[in-house]
Structure formats: C-alpha cells, structure tokens
Length: 200
Ligand SMILES: [Zn+2]
Image 1 (tube, helix red, strand yellow):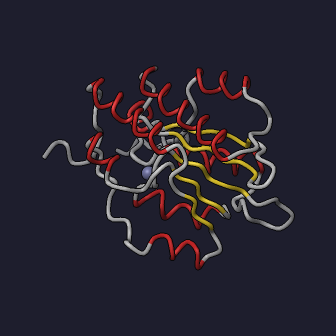
Image 2 (cartoon, rainbow, N blue to C red):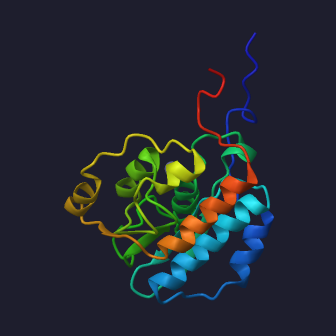
C-alpha cells in the first residue's frame, strides 16, 4: 500500500529567520565587490554560529549596479536536503523573486553570483544553468577542504575557461583571508561535517 500524497511529494527550502531579518536590514545596493563579499562572508559565519547550516553563503546581485537580489545560506542539515547548498539557495530564491528560471534572460540586467569559495562540483554545474554572467569567489584553492573537511567533489581543472566560453566572467581572491578565517572558526567549533556516505 503506497502512501504518496500531494503533501509528501513536495519539498520546501527556506532561509533561517535571522537571515530574513538581516536581508531586511541591508542597503539596497552594495556597489563594490568587497562590500558584496563582506556581506556574504558575514552570512556564512552567522549561519554556523546560529547552527542553521554550514559555513557557506552566496549572494545574487545585479553585476553593474550592485543591487542586492538575495543572499542564501547552506541549509543541508536543517532541511534534510543534500543539495541545499548556499549557491542553490541563492540562485533559486533569486529566480523566484525575479519570476524567471533564467537570470540572463531578455530584458534583465546582468546578474552576478558572489560565493565565499569556489563552488563545489554540483554548484559549479548550476552556474551556467542559472543565467548569471559573473561569478565572484573569495578563493579557489585547496584551503576550504583542508581546513573544514568538506569534500567539494570533482570540479574540472578547466573550470574557469569553461565558464568563460559560456560568457561568464570569473573573479577570484576577493576577501580571501576573511573567508578563510571563517572556515578556521568553523573547524574549531567541531560542528558536523555532512559529506555523503558517512554511514560507510
Ligand atoms: Zn555546492
């Protein structure tokens, strides 16, 4: 006897209450990349300090004006959803807010995704699907995995050029040390590292 119903064949992802309140407190525009990344890093830190997810955040902005669309945070553990990474949250919420599946669609200004490290294999794949024209990361080296223990998956070594070929600019090393400081703080807090296959 199957027990599927409309209620148990849907899923919802949402930002924690502190993030919603923080978004409402933010200025409408963050003109510089450093301001955008500082906000993202602040959200990444607050997310694990508030125990609402891992130390990851991602923001969607209008690239040229810096208008804030939304900042998402990692919700994997609280949502029982392994794909609820910060980038997926931010891109999906931005698309919902703007009412489009394509952030690079006709009539829209160029959009930019700002993340507190290079996206994992899954989120890397989500970038060209999203329609953003620009990806800004705090860093892209092995430090994130080395400090935190997360397995970011097999990102192709040619990842930058692959994005460039699709018209997506990549900007790295924006507030790199500040991002790393949050990872060190997270590692010292000894919270759950939620890689898959932990039952093995
Ligand atoms: Zn990811």
